[in-house]
Image (cartoon, rainbow, N blue to C red; front, top):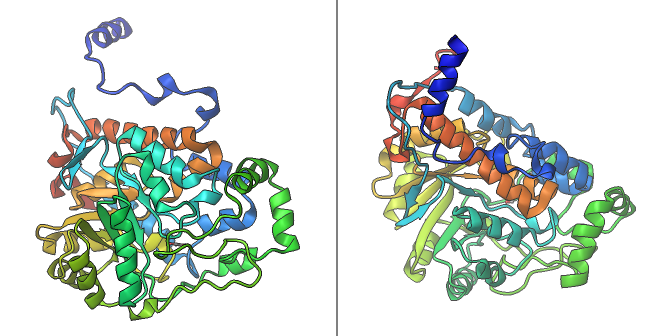
Length: 412
Ligand code: GLV
């Protein structure tokens, strides 16, 4: 009897607002049930050096691991009987409404994950109605990526040299971008021993080991490397400066990244005066720096430890977030690092973030299944968010508050 009653109740239940991901999933995507599932498939497809570069972090990986642990150190506080039948994860940021409260973080060398990886990420994001940030270390001219429509966010690495900064800002503006993200946590290259161990360098140095690792991944060799070579020649660093950078494969070239260690608040001011669009400072972990960013004219900050890839031991973004949200004033506060689940997104938003960015999982999805993979990864994360909103008792992203999270007693 009980099960008959249940069946009757189910018949009367209102349709959920979004179709379940499984309903529309083609066979080649069916094994991927969550973001974490893409990494193993990407590892099987990518040469060791490339996978190691994407997956790796600085020194002991303390900050990388702390990113994931920080989300587990918070517990959600669900509210019941809240009538969550009409719920939406749509989120407005800087006047634009996106279909989800997350975007794709900027990631270097994404053109080595899959053929035209930068375009793959941009297209998938555009189709899904979310923003993707173009990385300075990408291999496709930023002007070309801009042709994919969607959000126009560009992330720059800049030296403390006025003329180079001005020329780059002008280039990004001429290409039609509206959001300039300055990454501030890279005054010197990080110590990434894993890259040394796998033989990865920038530019990649031709070697027997590199050749062997390429040959051992025939799918990648044909569909990504050879396809890229035949279509575009050897990829170059296209977006570090106003001019084209060096090739990514070279025995002798040394990248002239310039005096990044001289970059200072004065340069942020310089950019602010020259750049007419929105200005975001990325890599902020201290409330004092967030105040400085606000006073120097930033429209937002991305709280981030660079995926644990810069200062090992740096705190995770989630730990820094509440204090930064408190002093942000009119700035928008965004977060990246360690977000792998819809519940992680909800925790960050409840702790004061207006939006979040997710990096590696989308790159692994691109490596594993190309654009379809990225679209599927976006759908999975969005479905988790919508499901978790219902379970948490909220119907709108703006309804998330500090009352929805508690620090776990063991972590407090
Ligand atoms: C580039 O931003 C990297 O972290 O390797």
